[in-house]
Image (cartoon, rainbow, N blue to C red):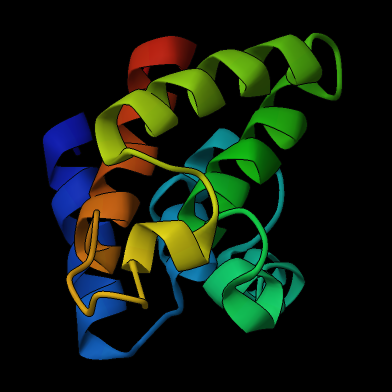
Length: 129
């Protein structure tokens, strides 16, 4: 599966309600880890919507960071995550879920499906997928 296909599949999973944003990213990148899709689904279930209250980092970005940690076995994960986070902020305009959803004016800075797409794409571009 190409990187673009993975990104689109993640957006479809999120959009259909089959997965939350974190789960959608970890599911399409599950082959980058030794965990099963079910294990990833369970471990990533509580990270959506900015940790459930929209006040923290976007769940899609968290999903990409989780896969980085698993893929690198923790070696260099902080620096890799930092690079991915910087690019995510550049493309999406923010890191915090509430800012991405721009709740105050009702118009999202970056819609959830685009956050999920971007997280997968940036992971793939940075990690050489």
